[in-house]
Length: 153
View 1: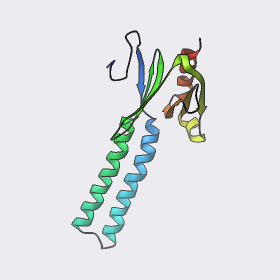
View 2 (view 1 turned 90 degrees about the vertical axis):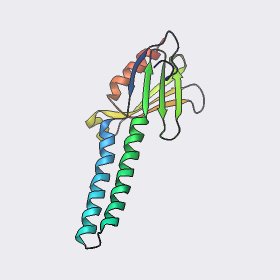
View 3 (view 1 turned 60 degrees about the horizontal axis):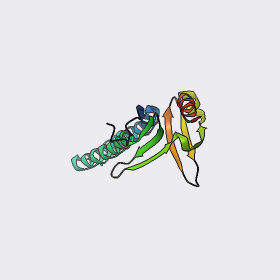
View 4 (view 1 turned 90 degrees about the horizontal axis):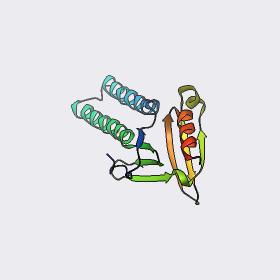
Protein backbone atom coordinates (compact mmCIF):
# COMPACT_ATOMS: atom_id res chain seq x y z
CA UNK A 1 0.00 0.00 0.00
CA UNK A 2 2.84 2.44 0.82
CA UNK A 3 4.47 2.21 -2.63
CA UNK A 4 1.19 2.54 -4.52
CA UNK A 5 0.66 6.09 -3.21
CA UNK A 6 4.35 7.05 -3.02
CA UNK A 7 4.52 7.19 0.78
CA UNK A 8 7.78 7.73 2.62
CA UNK A 9 8.79 5.60 5.60
CA UNK A 10 7.56 8.08 8.20
CA UNK A 11 4.36 8.99 6.34
CA UNK A 12 0.90 7.60 7.14
CA UNK A 13 -2.09 7.31 4.85
CA UNK A 14 -5.00 9.14 6.53
CA UNK A 15 -7.66 8.44 3.89
CA UNK A 16 -8.47 7.79 0.25
CA UNK A 17 -11.75 9.14 -1.12
CA UNK A 18 -13.68 9.15 -4.38
CA UNK A 19 -15.90 11.96 -5.63
CA UNK A 20 -19.27 12.15 -3.88
CA UNK A 21 -21.68 9.26 -4.53
CA UNK A 22 -24.25 11.98 -5.31
CA UNK A 23 -22.18 12.92 -8.38
CA UNK A 24 -22.01 9.29 -9.50
CA UNK A 25 -25.77 8.84 -9.12
CA UNK A 26 -26.58 12.16 -10.77
CA UNK A 27 -24.62 10.98 -13.80
CA UNK A 28 -25.76 7.35 -13.91
CA UNK A 29 -29.49 7.87 -13.31
CA UNK A 30 -30.05 10.05 -16.42
CA UNK A 31 -28.05 7.56 -18.50
CA UNK A 32 -30.17 4.63 -17.28
CA UNK A 33 -33.42 6.58 -17.72
CA UNK A 34 -32.32 7.67 -21.21
CA UNK A 35 -31.42 4.14 -22.31
CA UNK A 36 -34.65 2.66 -20.90
CA UNK A 37 -36.64 5.52 -22.50
CA UNK A 38 -34.95 4.97 -25.86
CA UNK A 39 -35.62 1.24 -25.60
CA UNK A 40 -39.31 1.84 -24.83
CA UNK A 41 -39.78 4.45 -27.57
CA UNK A 42 -38.17 2.26 -30.21
CA UNK A 43 -40.07 -0.86 -29.17
CA UNK A 44 -43.48 0.82 -28.84
CA UNK A 45 -43.06 2.63 -32.16
CA UNK A 46 -42.63 -0.70 -33.92
CA UNK A 47 -39.04 -0.07 -35.01
CA UNK A 48 -37.53 -2.35 -32.41
CA UNK A 49 -36.07 -5.73 -33.18
CA UNK A 50 -33.53 -7.99 -31.55
CA UNK A 51 -30.49 -6.35 -33.16
CA UNK A 52 -31.63 -2.80 -32.31
CA UNK A 53 -32.37 -3.86 -28.71
CA UNK A 54 -28.98 -5.55 -28.48
CA UNK A 55 -27.19 -2.44 -29.78
CA UNK A 56 -29.05 -0.21 -27.29
CA UNK A 57 -28.17 -2.63 -24.47
CA UNK A 58 -24.49 -2.83 -25.41
CA UNK A 59 -24.12 0.94 -25.85
CA UNK A 60 -25.97 1.56 -22.58
CA UNK A 61 -23.86 -0.96 -20.68
CA UNK A 62 -20.67 0.53 -22.13
CA UNK A 63 -21.63 4.09 -21.11
CA UNK A 64 -22.64 2.85 -17.64
CA UNK A 65 -19.33 1.03 -17.16
CA UNK A 66 -17.21 3.95 -18.39
CA UNK A 67 -18.90 6.31 -15.91
CA UNK A 68 -18.59 3.81 -13.05
CA UNK A 69 -14.95 2.94 -13.76
CA UNK A 70 -14.05 6.62 -14.13
CA UNK A 71 -15.59 7.32 -10.70
CA UNK A 72 -13.80 4.35 -9.14
CA UNK A 73 -10.43 5.31 -10.67
CA UNK A 74 -10.63 8.89 -9.35
CA UNK A 75 -8.95 8.95 -5.94
CA UNK A 76 -8.18 11.79 -3.57
CA UNK A 77 -5.46 10.98 -1.06
CA UNK A 78 -4.53 12.60 2.24
CA UNK A 79 -1.45 11.57 4.18
CA UNK A 80 0.34 13.04 7.15
CA UNK A 81 2.67 14.89 4.73
CA UNK A 82 0.77 15.64 1.50
CA UNK A 83 -2.41 15.82 -0.53
CA UNK A 84 -2.61 13.97 -3.83
CA UNK A 85 -5.02 13.07 -6.58
CA UNK A 86 -4.92 10.11 -8.92
CA UNK A 87 -7.18 10.24 -11.96
CA UNK A 88 -7.43 8.11 -15.08
CA UNK A 89 -9.21 5.20 -16.71
CA UNK A 90 -6.79 4.13 -19.41
CA UNK A 91 -3.80 6.12 -18.20
CA UNK A 92 -3.16 7.64 -14.80
CA UNK A 93 -2.41 11.21 -13.77
CA UNK A 94 -0.93 11.60 -10.28
CA UNK A 95 -0.46 15.02 -8.70
CA UNK A 96 0.69 15.80 -5.18
CA UNK A 97 1.59 18.75 -2.98
CA UNK A 98 3.45 18.43 0.30
CA UNK A 99 2.01 20.38 3.21
CA UNK A 100 5.18 22.45 3.47
CA UNK A 101 4.42 23.85 -0.02
CA UNK A 102 0.71 24.63 0.49
CA UNK A 103 -0.07 28.29 -0.15
CA UNK A 104 -3.85 28.09 0.19
CA UNK A 105 -6.95 25.93 0.21
CA UNK A 106 -9.97 27.14 -1.77
CA UNK A 107 -13.45 25.71 -1.30
CA UNK A 108 -16.11 25.95 -4.02
CA UNK A 109 -19.66 24.78 -3.36
CA UNK A 110 -22.68 25.05 -5.61
CA UNK A 111 -26.20 25.41 -4.28
CA UNK A 112 -26.73 21.63 -4.59
CA UNK A 113 -23.31 21.00 -3.09
CA UNK A 114 -24.28 22.95 0.03
CA UNK A 115 -27.51 20.96 0.34
CA UNK A 116 -25.87 17.55 -0.16
CA UNK A 117 -22.55 18.34 1.57
CA UNK A 118 -20.13 18.09 -1.34
CA UNK A 119 -17.88 20.58 -3.08
CA UNK A 120 -14.55 21.12 -4.75
CA UNK A 121 -11.29 21.82 -2.94
CA UNK A 122 -8.31 23.34 -4.67
CA UNK A 123 -5.05 23.03 -2.74
CA UNK A 124 -2.58 25.52 -4.15
CA UNK A 125 1.20 25.57 -3.93
CA UNK A 126 3.84 28.02 -5.05
CA UNK A 127 4.10 28.21 -8.83
CA UNK A 128 1.90 29.19 -11.73
CA UNK A 129 -0.06 25.96 -12.22
CA UNK A 130 0.80 23.92 -9.17
CA UNK A 131 -2.37 22.69 -7.49
CA UNK A 132 -4.29 19.57 -6.55
CA UNK A 133 -8.03 19.58 -7.10
CA UNK A 134 -10.48 17.41 -5.15
CA UNK A 135 -13.52 17.66 -7.40
CA UNK A 136 -17.01 17.04 -5.96
CA UNK A 137 -15.86 15.47 -2.70
CA UNK A 138 -18.19 14.68 0.23
CA UNK A 139 -17.77 16.38 3.63
CA UNK A 140 -15.83 19.12 1.90
CA UNK A 141 -15.82 21.57 4.84
CA UNK A 142 -14.44 18.95 7.22
CA UNK A 143 -11.74 18.02 4.70
CA UNK A 144 -10.85 21.68 4.10
CA UNK A 145 -10.39 22.15 7.85
CA UNK A 146 -8.27 18.99 8.11
CA UNK A 147 -5.99 20.06 5.23
CA UNK A 148 -5.67 23.58 6.61
CA UNK A 149 -4.66 22.22 10.02
CA UNK A 150 -2.11 19.80 8.57
CA UNK A 151 -0.58 22.45 6.31
CA UNK A 152 -0.23 25.20 8.92
CA UNK A 153 3.20 25.37 10.60
